[in-house]
Each structure stands twice: as structure tokens, then as C-alpha cells.
Image (cartoon, rainbow, N blue to C red; front, side, top):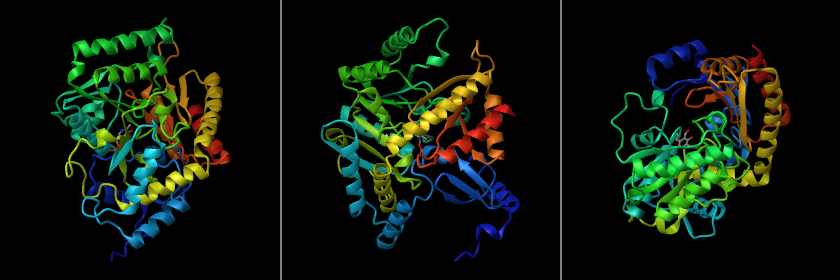
Length: 437
Ligand SMILES: Cc1ncc(COP(=O)(O)O)c(C=O)c1O
């Protein structure tokens, strides 16, 4: 057994080894060495504490190493680590499928399948939709993010860094227009802008792809990497009814928005729409690599035995963690808490807006909150450099904070939902100091 522990080397030595042996292609927002996580806090090798507003990019709604998750994973590891669901079934996979089918929107019959990563869930939603509809076309939206595999990269916006030099991409993938109210043409009301985007969406199916060739439309109910952009109810309902009219499978990608992040189990619940399929991952399993597709039973059953799956897909450890997560969300009232956290962030951000002339927009759904940094309140020109400087200040001063957006000018808040008011306010003070600096 290796005798190496974190303290075998200094932070500088770990950094040197990281640079020597780990691909440059994977970035580190923070170059400290994480050694312990607890709730909404992370500790590095040098004993420094970080308040975590990043939550492993929205993966830790129940926080780091929640005791119930740790206990469930330990118990599962002692009993059975991995028979491979394709080889022999086990209870946690089936129980999790039953629970998720119960909480997913809609009263129709549902089924689920589990995979490893978010991208793999989206890939499988596309496979399921294609098999079910016997069509090939895949429609996602501008500014959307769906992953880093070939298909999901093809569905994703933001060429640099996600796609640049990685083509050719998958064929029969099209990106439809998606609203962005803060950056709408000057003088238009939100309603008039909605009319415009809905018209552009309809036209897209004349100019870019015929609806009868489209298997699925995949939408993030709130765009995550795209900058926490919240569409109107009207737009989402239009897309859903367009899908219904044309026999297209409507997929809600809830990988970043799911599991209480927006104050409901799934963000799509805010829009009064029942999707055909939902992709889930991230906070589903509190940091264990697990993802899934939940949806209409007849769609999940379109593929024949053996056509879906994967060696590690739906591992018992991930499923055990996810079952604990669902209990924690209920027991600790995290849907309600999400709204409270969002409100605290919003109130603070509104104060900042009166003081700092570079905060253009504040938006949130539950605790999925963001501020948009601009060079000028009139022109609304994105200020990527300032957003990066604020995030860098936070990271140097004990707060893990992320940016987002096509132009990198959005500061996003993805705090664990178990965070206390005190810790949340402490983190917000660091953001405020960053704004001032
Ligand atoms: C909405 C959405 N879909 C898909 C993905 C891809 O997930 P993963 O990185 O686990 O492949 C992400 C990751 O950020 C995401 O936010």
C-alpha cells in the first residue's frame, strides 16, 4: 500500500508534481491542495479554510461529506462495491429508480437508467429519443452546456475552451435561439422580446432543420454554464408544446439545476411543464460519480436489452449516496432553504448594485443566483476581466467562487444548501470586499 499522505509533500511540491504529471487540459481555479471538506467548508494542506460557493460546480447541494452520505457509502462499500448492473442487479439501483420516478414531474408511468457523468446522461437521453422516435435530429440552445463528449460538445456553445480544436463534431445537431432578457435589444419589453425569440425559434425549424426529423429538444430550464439565464414560462411552455405538436421528445437537462438548487426537486417545475425525459447528475449523489435519465416508461423501454448501460453505470456506491441525498433534502427541508439562501444573496446583491456601477443584472431562481458584471450600465458590455478579478480575489481570501457565461462575466453562487446564515454572510462579505477591491 502507498504510504503517501497529503502531508508527505508541501503544497509547492504537490503543485510541481501536478504540473509534471497531470494534463494541462484540466484547469484548477484554485491551486491549493484540498484535504478535507465539511459542510460548506473546505480545508487545504496548509490549514487554510475556504467557504465553498462553488460546491464542485453545483454538485454539493447537501454539502461536503454529509454524515448520512458518508455512512451510506461506508455501509455499501462493506457490503458490495460493484457487481455491475448489467451482470447482476442490486437493490440500491432499483430503489433509487423507484424514488426518482416518484419525484419527477408528471403522473405518467416512468422509468430510469443510471450512468456515470452528466455528459453520459445527455448522450443516453439522445440515444433513447432517437430509438423511440426513429429520427436523428438533436436540437439544443445557444449558450447551452451539456458536456465534453463528442455528442454533448456538439450540443454545447462557447467554442473556447469547450470545443476549440476538438472537431469534427456530431452531425444532425442544431442550436436554437434562447432568450437572454438582460441583453435583449434596447427598448423592447420582456414580452415583446419573448414574441421575437419565439418567432425566431419557429423560424429556426424552417431555416435550419425540419421538425419531423428531430428526435429531441434538450433544454436546461436555467442555463448553468451559459450564465444562469432564466427563460420565461411562456418560452419554455412554447418549446414544450412545439415538441408535443411535432412528436419531438422534450428533454430537461437538470444536471446543474436539480435537487433543490432552485427550490424544487427539478427547475422545470417552475415552468408548469412536464418533460418527457430528465437528465440528472451532480448534486444527485453528493460528489459520487452518478447520473441518470428519468422519463416516460415507453421511451425508456424503446431500446432492447443490452443497448444501454455501461461498466460502472449506476454504481452501488453512487446509488447509496443518492438515496441518502434524497432523504437529506426531505429531512433538512432543503427546497425551502434554497429559497431562503437565494433571498439572502439577492438582498445583498441589490445593496451592491446601488454602490457599484458595474453590477448590471441580478437574477436567481431559488439559490441558483448570479450577478452580471458589465463595463457600462447603459451599453451592458460584458466585463470578463472584472468578473475574473472578483473571483480571483475571493479565491485568495478564503472563498471558492466561480464565474460563468459565454463572455465569462457572470459571478455565480452555488453554495451548498446546508450552509448556515452566518457562513453565507461571511462568504458574501468576501465577495463584497472583492467588489470593492
Ligand atoms: C446542464 C449540464 N449538463 C451537462 C453537464 C455535463 O456534466 P459532466 O461534467 O458530469 O459530464 C453539465 C456540467 O456542468 C451541466 O451543467
